[in-house]
Amino acid sequence: MEAIPPFETFYEEHRSLVLAVLRKRLGRERADDAFQETFLRALAAYGRLRNAENLRAWVLTIAERVAIDTYRRIRPTADVPELSHEDARPAYEDLGELTDGLPATERAAVVLRYGYDLTYDQIAAALGSNATAARQAASAGVRRLRARSTP
Amino acid sequence: MTVTPDLDNRFRDAAARLGLLDAAFDVLESPLGELLVAATDRGLLRISYDPDPNVELERLARLAGSRVLRAPRAVDLVRRELDEYFDQRRSVFDLALDLRGLTSFSTQVLGELARVPYGHTATYGELAARAGRPGAARAVGTIMNRNPVPIVLPCHRIVGASGALVGYGGGLDRKERLLRLEGALLI
Image (cartoon, rainbow over all chains, first blue to last red; front, side):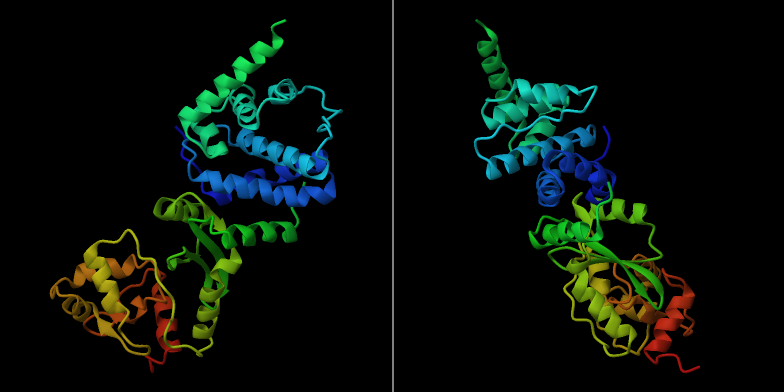
């Protein structure tokens, strides 16, 4: 198991990427606030992370949730626009669409588990809960999706 | 995508202000070269000469927790007192210390060390005796060498029985400069 790097190292490695993603998503003006919010959320959860795999996916997931929250705040009824010019879309983006409408916690758990391949410990850290609750949220989300896709 | 210094500093300030850090640090310029200074919510945790950031960050993380971030404002007080000391406007530091992770003997020796006044020296043997273990001069030497907060805890004021400077974690040259700054060396 890889040790968790000091937050400074993690931040320096990922800040450019996070800012780039948020600018694409939100535009230059709102991206700055979202950038700060993303790393503050990451920092709040960082002490509970159990291993260092997938830190990139983990912080991008937080950025994505911050972007969604930002959209909800500024235009509560609007759909979150999808990135239109990405060619090979990673799994988490498809899952993002697929899970639209799930309760927030279940949605996050499903996307983090199946889109980013995070462990339940990591998901728990991202959500500020525990591994058991994260596992339950992911399976509840999957059950809901199955029920939805059954005619 | 370059994160502007302004955006970067906003995040670092907010992180420290919200109390989300296990340890905050900054690298300061001083007459003795670069000093890495780290503090927690309990107080000053570390001062390192010639810091190698990677080594130092890992060490801080092991000591205090993984949420280690450069946050200049969080060490403003330390910066100010060190500046005053180097300008000869301060002879006593008024900083809370976070001396976690030390043995009880080390803590006791460092407590005695803190009482050696500005501009004065004591020997390793004297300090050992004051800490209740006369004859433990060698152990005291090791504790001085590993002093987590040199300058503020003045291990530069501890010299050999003959008055020779003997050794210093930051190099003998710095020990001599600190003692000259304090007027302890008249040669």
